[in-house]
Length: 414
Ligand code: FNR
Image (cartoon, rainbow, N blue to C red; front, side):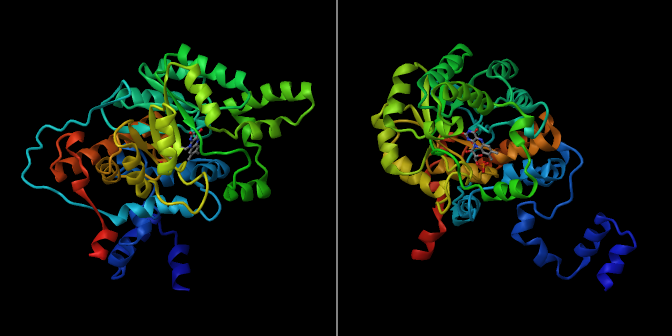
């Protein structure tokens, strides 16, 4: 076959791409979704080579153990929610205003007493040693240099106190609450002692197991003992639970799985037990948003866990207006899941979010180039947000209102 001999003479990938660029089919190929999301790109050699955050993804895939990359990228079941998170942004169009003085841009905002120089927040992601030996410390140092809020997962591979020291600024601490009250109380006390101003209570993983089929398939094929190579709070929890469970003669994993089934009674108990701000992450309906306000919750993160909670859901950017409407400015609303572009962030701000959390993009940066990779991801997202703020004629975050977006569904209905 001509293709085989073409490759057989040792043509490099670069030469192959040059050949493809010269092809009359190139405009069609270049317009594909895969290219736009970085699927077909060459591997960049340094963080500063990146043009957008998608440039880090293939490098992360190349460098990580397949099990670790699979764990990072997967959703659940058919990954409908995972894909919806990305696809929904294309259904929202921007309505730019012209001739506005945007020489001085201000992306600052204060949320629940924490001053942010940018509305881009690092979402809590567990076990980051899986992606780089410096793990959450590298992320904290990048967050410090670029001045971004970091939410640290309770499943972090580095102790909270060390991350706080590396960040030298406010960190919000994410909690997977346990019905075993002494465990939850101890985590709250630890966060208070470490100087965290806020607890982010994640409520969208209800018991175990979850339907994470891609990693299950991997386990069946290769049986990697992931938990044995990086200590995490999950392991610490399991060891503690094993001691209690052993004493009373029940299975520790089953005890933890049941212990993760939360309700509003436990939320109230947490609310009463800590003076810290309490934010609930994983809210997806107006009904639950109302309950958050009723139960004295300080903030909400609209999140479907990056498509990792349940399948067949809407994108969070589609759900956001429902939650904003329900809460009507009584508490701040953050959002995450699928945000990869400054324009994505702009759309969320226009629809009423106070800030946007990103997950996988900074892990791609971490896996690809460590601390400088995380820093580069933040720099790119920040630059893209500032570019779109200029283009839209919105010099401050406060100037970004629903008038700057229009859903294409509404246009079709007209
Ligand atoms: C997560 N997420 C998460 N959330 C949380 O509250 N505690 C955690 O420990 C984790 N761990 C975690 C691991 C991995 C590998 C991923 C991808 C995600 C969810 C995370 O905070 C956030 O909601 C999503 O990552 C946002 O979606 P994107 O930006 O990754 O699409």
